[in-house]
Image 1 (cartoon, helix red, strand yellow):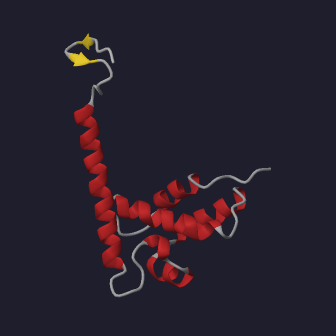
Image 2: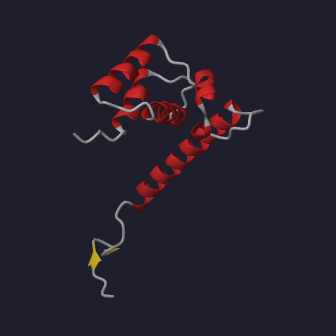
Image 3: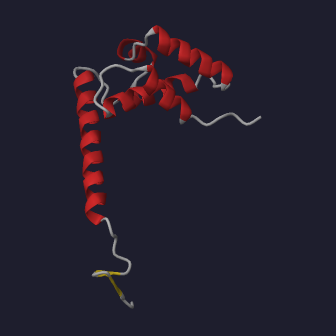
Length: 122
């Protein structure tokens, strides 16, 4: 493999390797923090993470305010989301809240989770 020198770096070497590893480490820390919050939340239950919640656990662990309920209701109607999408959006919103260290699901978390859902084909 031919290597040319380019401003003291070999061609093909990442220019921002240190930045990449800092971002990677910060992401890892957020994920580990989210996992720890979920472990604490589900301590003493059969659950280990948000993805394992059923309807009963969602009612207990994912309370929504009036704004959140209204947003979900509107999204289900306007985006023609199926009833099966509801728990997935709720779990994703809770995971997003865990990743940024917030204990409650906000309308911002729900809006972000909704935008990740695939839209139905017409």
